[in-house]
Image (cartoon, rainbow, N blue to C red):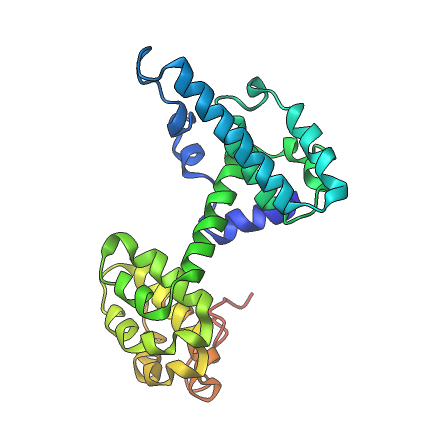
Length: 248
């Protein structure tokens, strides 16, 4: 399970940026807001609502014979065990990440992972589901805004060949000045596959660029779209054509 968690974090942006930058690790919902900001009645109501949300998640996420063991493990959790992390969000994340297998929770294996990594993986999976639920026209519309462009590209990549109607808009994005954006567009075109065939001429050009990252993703996209076209790309000295890796 921990190996799977590392793969999730690596595939969707690496480690939690909170940890990477050294910023304060306290979650937003426990930031100090003043002694009179929330009344005791409000806190009690919030706690009751979160407790019920966790109970429902367990009921829906596990087979009846496993629910009692999961509930018992959650009752054994103490706030101080996880720094500033509120228990309810962490428990909901654990239910989601377990995928219906109670072993990760019941055995306490989750305690070997940093709670920030668990929450981050949960957030990434939640976003992935939200993007997957969007249709292609909606994702194409998101390409117009810088703030949503990366998410849109991730969503279109997940769609694979179904995202073929987005190809004309993706081709325009290949003129973007940001290397990362162009690399992600190339990755998306490759995921679409032969449906991106109209991109072949520009991919042949990009596959010969000096920029290693652009060259690598352009060649990978060509191999997925048109292996015959990819075979026409000349290798840079010391490189394997189509893989962009130096020969030893």
